Amino acid sequence: MKTEFTCQVHSETLEVGISKPLVGYPSREIAFMNKQFPNNGIYSLQGCMPKSDSDRGQIEIYCPSCKRLALEYITPFWKKWEKENEE
Ligand SMILES: [Zn+2]
Image 1 (cartoon, rainbow, N blue to C red):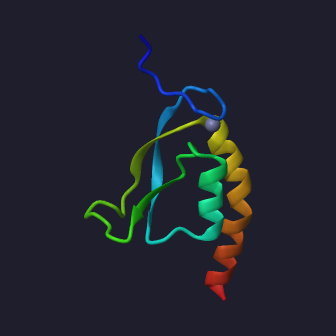
Image 2 (cartoon, rainbow, N blue to C red; image 1 turned 30 degrees about the horizontal axis):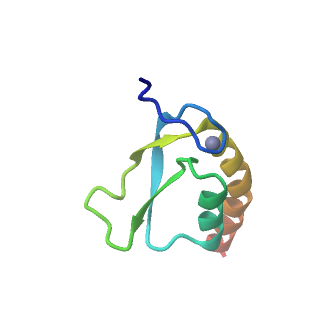
């Protein structure tokens, strides 16, 4: 019996990686990204009650295809948000 997890969208074997913790409510763009690319593994949602270690990278399983597509989607927003923070 196989114990591997596969992506329900891409049927790819999930890999283990480190995700960025995200405390609080995810923005509309991030919520959309998580819906479109369910195993992107970019963020781990911590909710509004973060644990003591929730500011550190979290171990997360991800699908390489979801991650690649999600990064393509979210990178322009990261640039936009960075710009907004500078102003
Ligand atoms: Zn996938």
